[in-house]
Each structure stands twice: as C-alpha cells, then as structure tokens.
Length: 215
Image (cartoon, rainbow, N blue to C red; front, side, top):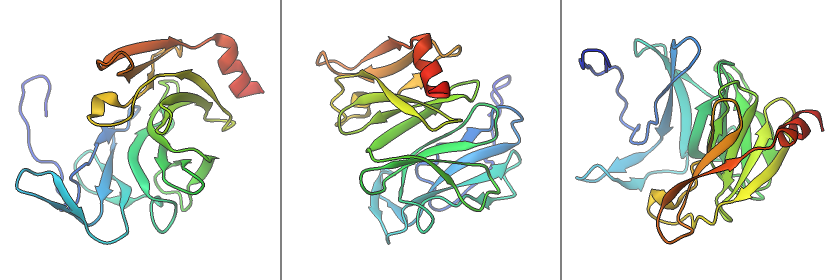
C-alpha cells in the first residue's frame, strides 16, 4: 500500500500464509520477512481451522517486488517448531525468533542465506520477540509466567527485567507483546493485571544493559 496516495496492489500470494506477519527489512527495505504456516486450512470466516501434518511454521523472505523467495532454515527439520513470533534485528539484516524446543523453548538468530541458525538461548517458553532499533538487544516474554526478559544480541546473555502480571490467556490483549523504545530506556508491554488490558512501560537501568553486553 502506498501511504501517500492510498493505492494498493497484491504483491505476493501463498496458500499457507494465513498468519504472514510481513515485515520490511528496516535498513534497505529490499527484503520482506514472511511467516509460512505449512499445512494450514481456513474455515469460512478465514480462521485457522486445522493444521495438517506436523511440519508447523517456518519463515521465508521475498524481495520488495514479491519475488526471489528464499526459505530460512528454521522450524522442522532444522529447529523446534517456530512459535510465530519473529522480527528483523535493527539494520543488521538478521532475524531473531522464538521456537518451541525442549526443555521449554529457545531463541535463534540468522540471516537470509545462512545454512544454519545460531541458538542464542534455550530453556524457557519464550513467546513474543522484538529487537532494539540499534540491533544490540532483544526483548521477549516468558509465556508461562508473563515475565519479560532482555538480552544481548552479541553475547546471548539475558536477564529478567520485570514481572508483568499478564495472564497470557485469551484474547491477545492479555499477552505482554514487549518492545524496546528507541534509545533502549524503556520496554513497553501489555498487561491485564488490573483486570483490564492496559499498556505499561518499565524503565531499563543503564547498568542492566552494561551487564548484558560486558558481564
């Protein structure tokens, strides 16, 4: 869609992108990240009715014209199942994502064209994923406790930032969906801890980020 004049056209189609979460690569804008829910079947209201087979979700990129499709080595058989939460890491050209992988979950990092994704962390049921604008940090939520964690892209070191009190149930507004503001001073998130879904912010101390990067 052209934001200046409102004109739009179909750029790309695929039978199994019912939750595509398309994202332009923020630095050059030449690639678009797409989530592929392999084997999905939609009902008449276009809700996911059934996931056929056991392959689950994976990711691919296309160019800004809708072609040059390239699959990323994530999801089965390369990693655990993709949770459906991924993003570009600032202007680095890398993609960070969460997967379901024993003993709970894991976080992976890779660039389009990589043959193997690099595992940054493993051990908790991480869900939503976001990265800082400068590409130095990531922020994610533990989908069991609703606790928010911040980590370093360079070191893979991660620490809990705060408890949200979010129930992580249904609807989506009960999920934290955390992201870091430009400048890395705050993390914004959802919480229904008061009984009403609201938007909150937690301050990130400077020493906190220093420990993540320097130990």
